[in-house]
Image (tube, rainbow, N blue to C red; front, top):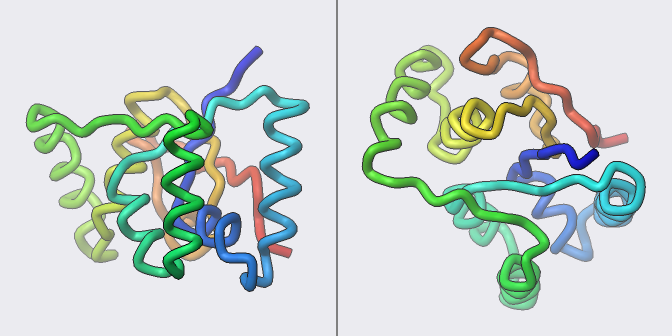
Length: 142
């Protein structure tokens, strides 16, 4: 059975920045997901943009080529989706949630999943899906 797993910025940085302390761990987690869990990775463009901010040119190119090969599906955000994303931002206004995290919360509802690859313990320990459930972090930094 294939499970849908959301992909956040921290995981992508670790995966595509060979100098990142979590690089080997991220590669191992990806291999495990593809081999044993048969996961379908999904993310959004705001996460890609945020990730590219932290990567060098080679890392950016590798990330974009990885996406082009279909390793992760990027869910398009249509104008009709903006109201729901805005509601997420409003719901977590006291935490000043950023757009990448808000779109991942919205995506969790669209994809009916709580599974997430992230290094962001602080935010994703506090953030909840629309039905009030906690995220299941599949990869947590050592």
